[in-house]
Length: 265
Image (cartoon, rainbow, N blue to C red):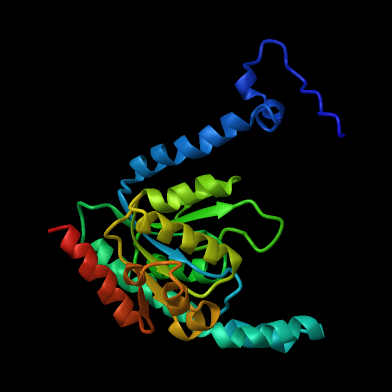
């Protein structure tokens, strides 16, 4: 069993100014509380009241970038991976376009403090932030400290670029101000985020009337047999109405804005 590293104190210095203590096991409750409370102040300062949240893979790249990387790639394994990503490259451009389109809509809702929020990393997250950034909409990134893949994309507003250590608090902030959700193709992380939010809506814990768009039916219907889950009684048929499949930016935009405008009447 590993021994815990001793914390060195500086005489006369407040204990909460000691980073060794804050980063230690016993400092964990303070770190957790900081990640809960810090964003409250930041969002209040920036006038953020409502968010449209984008979920999706960090690995998806626009086709032009894929071709560029393939051209310079010398590793056969990596080249094969880049080739496979061509099947989902279209979703980067769709996410960027939808981010911009929803951003323009958000810019007109002057008193409602709307922003586009993503997980802050590359791929679909970058595309959503990029679209919002293109049209001057507040662009939030909730980044997470990981050993791979995750780094802040350059399209997040400087004052809204948040870094998290804990997944569960990051999820809390995804949901706290969410008024709409768009789920683009993704892997384990995207599935985790999507199903947690759908569970909260299904159980009426949160977001009962929130529009949820699952974008890209040709991808999602291969990944999940939605009807089979209902046919076997694992969910009710009515639960399939908690979300909308969309395959065009225009459809996704209409589903989201129509639902949001009804709640704002």
